Length: 333
Ligand code: ISE
Image (cartoon, rainbow, N blue to C red; front, side):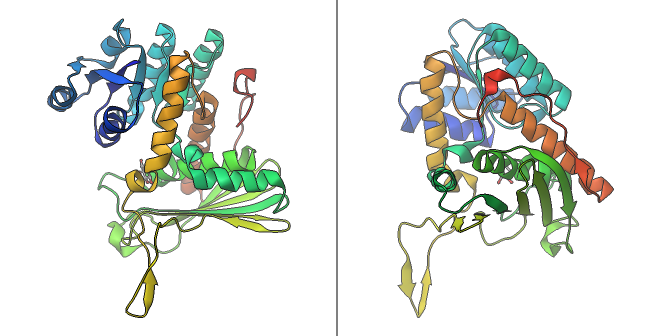
């Protein structure tokens, strides 16, 4: 399958590496980026052609499927262009930055009548989260009641704001909570303890509480300046048991009277296998003209929930989340 990539920053380049060196079944023939020099450099490395705009890349006949990994505010319009061209599209989060733009994509795809869009919520392809979901489905821990989800980054870039903790970081926890609990959010509130002094004044960490329709509570800790590593925690507490994400080291080292194991440096390391699985699924689905896993609906719910979370930061109160009716095209989480 011949693929075009829009946006060749950190994540775009990581996906290009993955598709050109690790996975089979796809070749990248087209590249576009607002930074033309960067696009040229990446394209020269892999023998692809550069395009001045994402729209031109999407319109190119030889491009059979598209990866959107550009700056968030541009996603919605590229995804819409892919749907208009009938081309399968993998889109990093967010699907679009505003609810209206997400609704426009929902509209376009439902009119098309078939899924074309896959969202980059890679945690759904992580073996540990999948095992957690299987455990919940098996009934072993009873009905889920509370899901504490820890999302820790060692540091974040200077432009990162407290709102990004919701729209950029907790958005992954929001999506995985919906997937694990098979449920939708109804209300959100956000509390902040005293600030981590490493954060140059950033309101960090944050504790986000989400109430789900069936009554479970999701408590998301975002700590984005925690220095020690990239650490993703999670535990679902049910009526009769708990299921917890285990440490995922291949080995434990015992030395000098201590035992230890590696904690990943960043999301590329922690979710490397999940990203591979996500793209294997996408390549297979896109070859068949469709999409797999997280959908436009999931992108819409993530944008609306994180957006209302931003409102909850400002109000300091509990904000309600109202979703539109889920179209039949997106029947399951
Ligand atoms: C980043 O955009 C991601 O998607 C990472 O998974 C997340 O851990 C990080 O906080 C975000 O900024």
